[in-house]
Length: 214
Image (cartoon, rainbow, N blue to C red; front, side):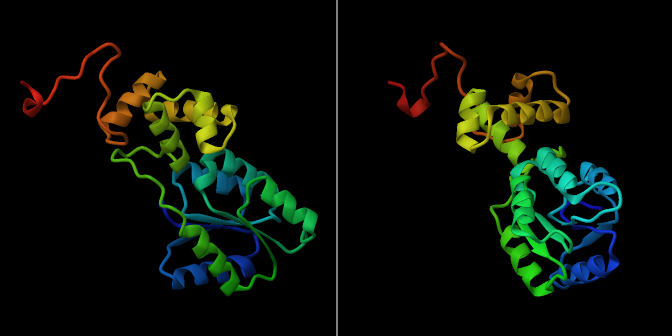
């Protein structure tokens, strides 16, 4: 799978085939896998634009896959859960609570699926990195706020997530960038233009521009 494709996760080809056709008619490239483990492996290598995830899989449940994808990718990855067996209100609530953006019952109406998917895909675009580093949109936001000097608790309030989740994002940022500290990660953020000019060091006066000098 290449980054930006729609990923369909289903062992039922009667679901996978029409879903892929629906998105391909809109011009989206698609990929499909039949198991939860394959889905987790493939999304580690490339981030999809959207995931359509069947709850009934042969190895692990769609609930588990959804939860893990949300933990890894943050809030910016659109996930649509679908199920033919678990369609009670309590099932839908469970799916939404673990991170699904939508929960649809089978048999799917392709027009409804596409309409809901287009709404999710029209969200604010994920910030991009100039460098070839697979940070998620949420990780970029955390890195930008770190670069502004916000502590972990303030970042959590700014992004409406828990301080523990912020800590997890910071650990992943450090690992993905191949650095050893937050300071080094922030230095990369400035280098790659994710934030504005680096502020002067504490206690260091800013030199006035030539036009401002007496």
